[in-house]
Image 1 (cartoon, rainbow, N blue to C red):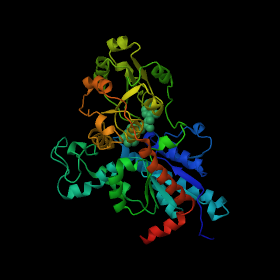
Image 2: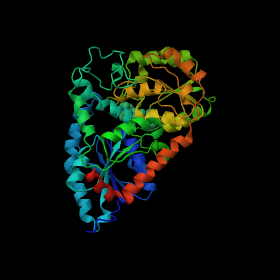
Image 3: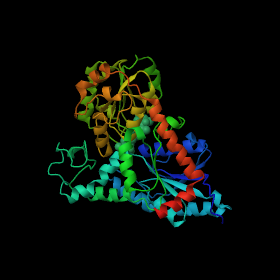
Image 4: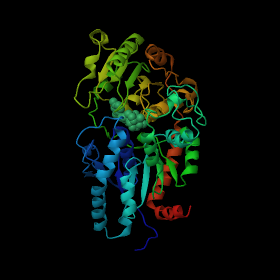
Length: 453
Ligand code: UDX
């Protein structure tokens, strides 16, 4: 078969089955579909995406052998390990059948997989298919993880006090308490995760849902370690059309409620799809919001295991005084909410998607990180490092554990931020063009080049 001019027009996407990972992967699919690529999504049965929201995609379910909901983040690594082990054979069978039906090499697919779904790289490499990694978190968090072996060797980790506010040598702004490990009692799981994330196998490029204007120096450092093209094409939700990839049903009634609120007046509260707070903290948050006297929109998810309603924990007195000033939903159309002019602040757990969605709309954030990368993101948000346009002067620094009394002040004193849209769009458009070129025309060439690097 003639290899020159091999054009990949078929893409097989392999998302990791959590909301914060499904969203960027399907956004990437939407963007590439609009550029003329055909999209197949090979997904685990666990948390399988809503196929009806993406009528242009083909969906292929992979038997994953998962029989019960994992306790995330506690069982994260064990869960990912089973998922990778179980999905490998069905994925290989699916791809082999797909290849068997192709008559010409230019119909062979390229695999784009979430960095955590490493079985996809093993299968692509085995079948000699090109592959690309999608990294769904920030480059800065990844570099923080990659510093662990050095820190361990130099005796800095495990730290004597994991809540230490001493700066970590060589990690710029981060204190020991901001490191992404959930515990230092056993470093093995973190080291295993680092090994997974740093093994790019035969993949020919890495795509980031990030922006050059936010993470240029981290990207440059990363590029030195991994000499395949690194393309930051975010914020993808601003390029992809708005079709939802929510696993939970969005309650759009909150938009009608927002329509009745004043400009920049509402504090939006959401801790993403995994993080949760206990009954005590929930009660504290309720009174903080109440005392702020600001209108608020609060996402409180039901417990995924037993469907219990955490809103039952809210004090009766709070519920009685809620009136029109507060609105509580189980799941919101978040991007629409953050883009709404009534929203003046976002009290967030600082998951990476929430962070870039808020930054893209210029919404100041109040940070309440719960685990992992959220702690790193919080520091870069609150120390004004991730600033775009005028943001430097206005992002509120509220990162103490119980910022309840500051909620009102943060919202009422801050204007919505002027985001430099040119800055946001330029870099991602350039990178997107590079990605299309990479896939559409130069892929084979780059694959060869990489071997020579
Ligand atoms: C997880 C990790 O917890 C996070 O730290 C990591 O960066 C990504 O994977 P999650 O906690 O769900 O993600 O947070 P986040 O990254 O913010 O993703 C949540 C997504 O759900 C966002 O795209 C957000 O727009 C969406 N969302 C959230 C809704 O659509 N409605 C809601 O009510 C809440």
